Image (cartoon, rainbow, N blue to C red; front, side, top):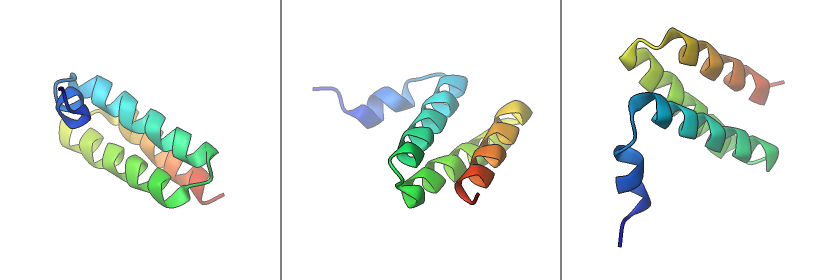
Length: 68
């Protein structure tokens, strides 16, 4: 049986950022703001490590959205 974590780790970097962001948005819609922030901060960290400025700005915008 394949574990979810193994599938996630096998994704390309940009797909990991997409999935992390989508999960954060899902948690936000469910008003699970702590889990939402966890995903957005993870995405921000990864995007900075990879130098993906567009994803960095998306993560920062989504973090701001949680605090509105």
